[in-house]
Amino acid sequence: MCIGDRPVAAQLRARAPALTTRVVARLLSDLPVYAELPHEEIAGDIADIVQHNLRLFADVVEHRRPATDTELAQQRDSAAQRAEEGVPLDAILTAYQVGIAMCWEETAQDAGPGDLPAVLEIMDRIMVLQQQLTSAVSGAYLEARQILDSQEHGGRHALMAALLTGEDLEDFTRRTGLRPAARYLTMTLALGTHDDEVGQAPGPGAGVAARRKIRRIRTALDRFAGTPALTALDETGGTVLLPVAEPPPWSGPGGLAGLIAEATRAAGVPVTAAAETTEPAAVPAAVARNTEIVGLVARTGRPSGLYRLADVLLEYQLSRPSEALNGLARLLHPLEAKPELLHTLETYLAHGLDRRAAAAALHVHPNTVDYRIRRIGRLTGLSPARPMDLQHLNAALVARRSV
Image (tube, rainbow, N blue to C red; front, side, top):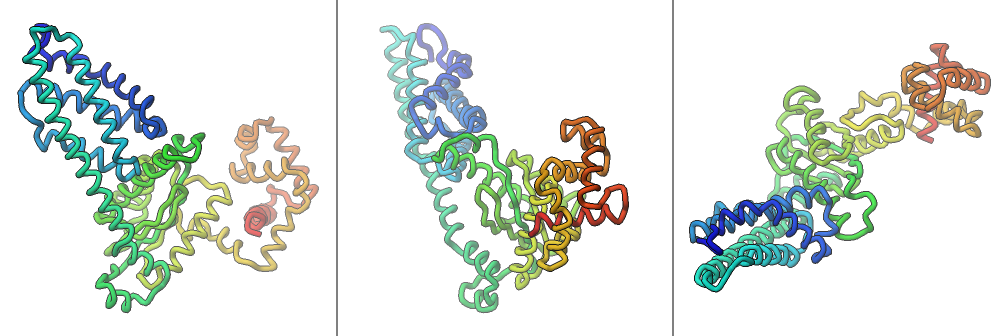
């Protein structure tokens, strides 16, 4: 089929990249919800689906037929993702209408009087394709929303609530018919803030960025478990329960460290996690320990990653309320009015007593580090150079963060 003696399909395919850019720009200018989406999503998923639609239209015109179900699969997947991110359905359908209209303008701009039959046939193809797109996108979107709503308010939500609150699980099974797994991997996650969440005013854009991050975390968890995870997550983190037959390995192939690394990569943010495998009745206690471990990791300035109780034994024990805890914290009281000394001590110990590494981190000369360490010794009576004093200084820093 030709317009102006040029094949329409070939022309449209050749112009698809440039037309995609113009369609995306139009969406950003005309639809506020698209302007508030993360840049990563606009340049990735949204641009991809726009170009896919343009090439699909070229195929429909070239072969003079409707689109097939297979050719509409990417649009259905995209609609389901937008549903998970909370993008309104009316905005999605409007975006498709904008794209179709601009595609028609691009196609018909070179038409002359002699091209009327081709123009009418192309218009008919456009109307059929738009109807197909509207049906496919609406159906996939509403199905995704229904699944999300049922998960949120249905049996999995009730099961997780029962496990976390320590409800009598035999009574819960009799009442609901839902049976807990024999074991659960309990995890507490702390999620960093994605670049797309920073600097945005509260509204749809920030919300979409957060939901996108959470969706990717859940996808990684579900893939690891081979079944939908029980999750209570928001943009800062939360609790995860994964049914497992046996405690999964901590590292190596199929291990938990790999899961957290994959979640970090997928979400594009630092992920800190504490994990413990336990029986259903012990889930509340395990979750409480995990939450405390993640808090200790944050307070002690450790890097993101996977932790267990064995990794923070000293910090965990010293965080228990006691007179000894207060006494340890008071060892550093002479430094309270001198924050540069306290910061130097923390940095020096964190870098394994390496004065040059500490100086680089503090942006000072190594001699300055030496001078400050000597001042710390004079004020507190404790020197990192003495093994016993070093133990007390480490313990005092932990205690100070805990009181």
